[in-house]
Image 1 (cartoon, rainbow, N blue to C red):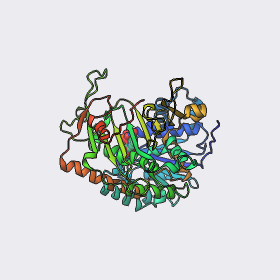
Image 2 (spheres, rainbow, N blue to C red):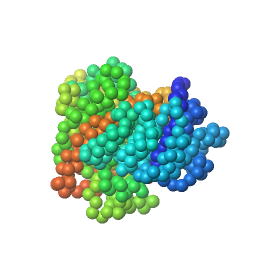
Image 3 (cartoon, rainbow, N blue to C red):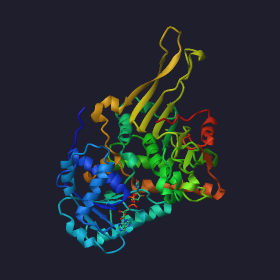
Image 4 (cartoon, rainbow, N blue to C red):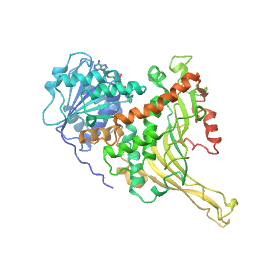
Length: 488
Ligand code: NAD
């Protein structure tokens, strides 16, 4: 299977925060991979812009090291790396002052796509937008890319939208949710809207429920202070899980174009029902006494012994529209869980009547879409248990693990960031969040958080390397359902 690589137009990409963790781990190694694949043209230029004083050579050295460490392969083509690094330069800049802006303006070329990646905290978004404008660095074709978190509630998200809208049209603003850049997420749309098979069944008449799980094995790591002010609801549910839910639940857009897709997603968010307090389970991880690394429990890790912030959340929600009325959507995400796994499962209803009798066993079709690891799609199909033992039923998976189905090229791991950056250069916003979507997501999230804050709810402790607090399993059991196992 040969995948087609279509080079993008020449560009100048300025990475504000070009010395930061995200730039070194994701953005720059991703750009290098696109360069090696022939997608980033040799005339493209990348300008790192950050606070540290450094010259071009110092920056190239730093980026070379980052690519060695985070490039995902020990087999780096030294010649390609050298020529890639030649396209890089660096400007020491102050987002809140005037330092460096003239130098940046001098480096930028006319007649190429200009993109500005705001890989800095959101408190700098407004300053950057204003200075870009004041220094005449942008025109109507320029684009800006902004990172999460996009606000911490509706009011702050609105303010960020206003700050950016003062200088940029919505069509120039690319709000990243890297989950949307994953191959399987786009495949989800291909499976739904490119096949006749699933869409007629994709509704409350045939679907019993939907589960979305994003499980991480890591704890809060070095982000404790930030995380404790955020928690799983803000950090994961409001953005990543919400985006997945939208793609599962939305109506077929008329076209696969940015506004048609985003209009449909917005309708889903606006149709989400309020969540009842007893349909929410929040948790905080305990330390694992057998952990060879002796990693601390949540409250120790965030240095806040009284913290009420959740490192785990499970919830049941509903979408109030004709397609989904009565079908529960169960969402679950957490840190320090038993395995790293992101999966969406569409659990279909039982057959209305079993012609084989109850002793043959009852089985449900489950379509599971796995985002990480081992991206792929599996459909559980019921067949006869082989052998002469009479008519007994069993499940077998129709498995489309991309690595198996498409061969080594299909499994080529194009990281979400590199795909999304190429979309920015191409000017395609389909996989980016629109301002009204983000605001609608916060409008749903805010009362949920306000509710547990007012009630003084305390998260339930859970064992590290488990599937979360017991109450999460009970949330399902009360409905006669169960979570899919969290497996690597
Ligand atoms: P970081 O602290 O490692 O880097 C911050 C960068 O911003 C540095 O290059 C610094 O020089 C620059 N900077 C800070 N103040 C500045 C100023 N006044 N003027 C100019 N430059 C300034 O942060 P990070 O982890 O790279 O994260 C960057 C953004 O991306 C944050 O909003 C973060 O929430 C978001 N994000 C990060 C990750 C990740 O994996 N690191 C993942 C998702 C989102």
